[in-house]
Length: 187
Image (cartoon, rainbow, N blue to C red; front, top):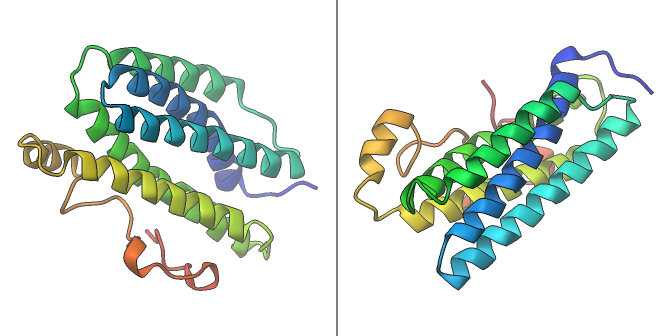
């Protein structure tokens, strides 16, 4: 089955490849931290990203959407560069930028759900919702690790993410069920 929604198709292709970049980045991030609990948590996040990649691929295959060689190459390089940089940029920046990245990734999955819904397709609602919520959990984890760091207010002012600002409107303490989640990540 084919779908005619260029924005959704491109979003799926990007998400598939970007999940690989994120997983590579978390490999370096986990290897660069000393605390065993941080290492374990970051490795679990890497595993989650590989799982998201597999789920996005299943959706792409269902609609005969090919993997983008361009995105695969681009995000492979980005992921490896970020992975290596974790050893040289200190402790704070990998946590900060991982949290900011995850904050944006949340909306990718809710936008996919919304795009599918505009075509009357609801069968992916639960998995896309779950992946979006999992990305929010990742965002919250990284923010918790740095929330008391003296650099956070400066980074938040420059990069528009932190305690005050998020790139999505999801509150895990007051989350809506799948059927009532259409207001998440509306532009």
